[in-house]
Amino acid sequence: MKSANKGYYEFFCPVKTIAGEAALEHLAFELSSIGCKRPLLITDKGVVGAGLTDYIHAAMDSAQMEFVGTCDDVPPDSSVETVAAIVAQYRKLAADSLVAVGGGSVIDTAKAVNILVSEESDNLAKFSGAGILKHPLKPFFVVPTTAGTGSEVTSVAVIADLAKGVKLPFSSPFLLPNAAIIDPRMTLTLPPHITAATAMDAMTHSIEAFTCLGKNPLSDAYASAAIKLISENLIATLQTPKDKQLRLKLAQASTMAGIAFSNSMVGLVHSLGHATGSVAHLPHGMCMSIFLPFALEYNLEQGQGRDVIGELLLYLAGPEVYAATPKEERPEAAIAEIRGLRDELYALCSLPRTLSETGKVERSQLKRIAELALDDGSIIFNPVEADYEDLLKLLERAY
Image 1 (spheres, rainbow, N blue to C red):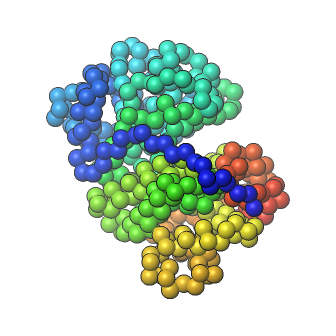
Image 2 (spheres, rainbow, N blue to C red):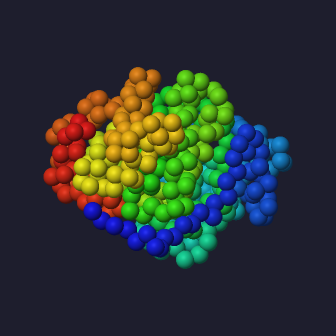
Image 3 (cartoon, rainbow, N blue to C red):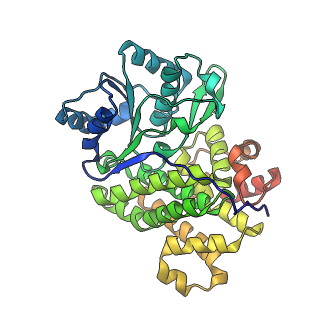
């Protein structure tokens, strides 16, 4: 088993969080307080169609501020071409700041747009990688509309270069927005299966942050709080989807999970999920939900500290169950709680528990998924190593 240097760690999250009912009404003040007068709105057709931008415009109107323009053509997997089109609009409209309203693709797109408008460049690939950016970027604010990705508090982005058939990764603290605005109105219209899948994405961020090599006391605090919030509120949210307080709790959990994993990294679940998404085009949150218990079981079998997985039971099931469960049984009990939650989600909204239940993954694809997962950067932070044969066996179990 690998070991991390527990005597040293770094933790960084300078993003201001503005949360709660009427959080949107603070956006105009945040913009004007740093001299922004011509913000450009970046979003997608789904967000506009759901009426969510109406709340944004109303909040801005009440403060006598308006957007200089709106770009709503961001696709589910953003591309270099999408970024270039928005950069052209930014320059044409002489915008001075960016507001991203949407999920992970919209937020990543806005981060990439900010690179080019700030660096006065048209070559996005030039900035791909870690630590390439050396200067602060233009003012940038994020309003997430899903409670899952945590992109509003992460220093990374991924944009597809369709012509070359590759995905360009970006990593820099300068990609972090000035503020994340967490308003429950933004997630009220999420359908049940997306609510469940995105919440399980956040759950996976939290659990991997808590169990992977980069864990530290500060990331543990955020991760454990997020696990508890999701465990206590996800099923209730699906049963009463219009409850703003429940929606807010899931949204806050997603943000806390984002802070946790951006400081401690993720592991095997994400390696498998990224690979499966590439090969079978499954939604990321669905992949996370499928692989989470299988990866934890693998880590346990390979000798990962039982105490760490056992401690998850406290946040997944509460102090009474934790205290009543013998210490040696807690790791398996924690994984059983996750499986139980997935069973409930399957019953409520048909969120798949196995690859075969998705109806979109062929057994013949498992070898390719294993190959890609082995080359995924997340696997480096998994507490125990896995080779190709290990991954193939795990995928067979998950099938």
